[in-house]
Image 1 (cartoon, helix red, strand yellow):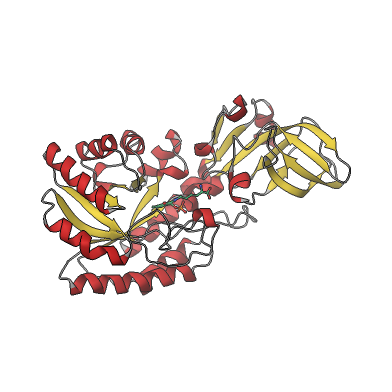
Image 2 (cartoon, rainbow, N blue to C red):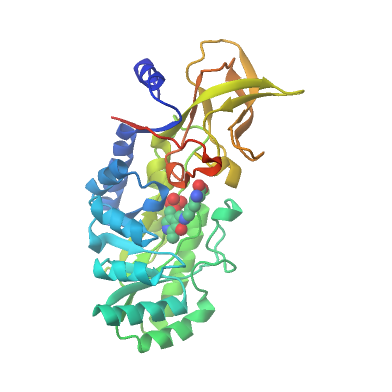
Length: 384
Ligand code: LLP
């Protein structure tokens, strides 16, 4: 992924920084677009994965919609070229101000996560003199087999509503004249690698659709969320996620009527592989039984390993040594959780070497903080 010319360029930049391979992003988007057109699917990009302006502009240029989880994301999506009538807005805690913003901008659909939220949207829509289109986010109670922090489709979590609550919601909707129920929404979790989970989601959605038909409710929008995982272990071999298999599962197993549209909300699978965090080795320190490579980037710049025990491939991209050694690759933050990898085999590593932490394009830059008042990744290098 990094040729000599690029590495020479890296050497001139202040570290740490995020590097994005835009050619890869374009190839990924071309694939998504091709399949979306083939199956007539509507794909919304989940801005939460990466909301770098340049990246958003590229994604919107492929005609994708936007999946937003805050008023600011809605505004950012519109400012970077996404069309309001392709914006969906999810989140368990939409504030009144955010709802009003979305109403004013005439977004396509609110993905509603509770009865009270539906009531509030109805009130605010009345005040704004608008009709809000909504989809109900339902917990399908489908396993996602992923990290517990990013599993979201089980009954016992804060997201969505359970089937048992639907009757009451439908009652409320009968009197909510400023709301139009257009669809149902699901999202079972993120970084899902076993596609069987999506097959199970399809079966569940089919059952839930039958329930709505039995109530005489016609829904035009079926939103199955996101969650397609990527290969963090082999970012060069599999740098484009398995969109073929993923979309074909929904095409094969989801029962839809010709009048219905299927929506997706993909984040990680679109942007993860095109990004790397580039950091410099500050010190190499010998412990009693191990040695540490201490980087100038810490968990404040990329929190995934500390928060989810996530694996990211780590490469020394400047060492010329043919010998290898084992290092715990850590950051400078005053927390033991501040590491990027334990017992990582690298060529002999020295102060000043550049380290690439791969597959960092999703949930990397967006989750940065200035904890410890350490430097955030400042420069972002975008290369075609
Ligand atoms: N739709 C909804 C309702 C979501 O909650 C999410 C992600 C997505 C779509 C996009 O999912 P994706 O295609 O990116 O898997 N920070 C964590 C991931 C949190 C995901 C939150 N929801 C991480 O670094 O792994």
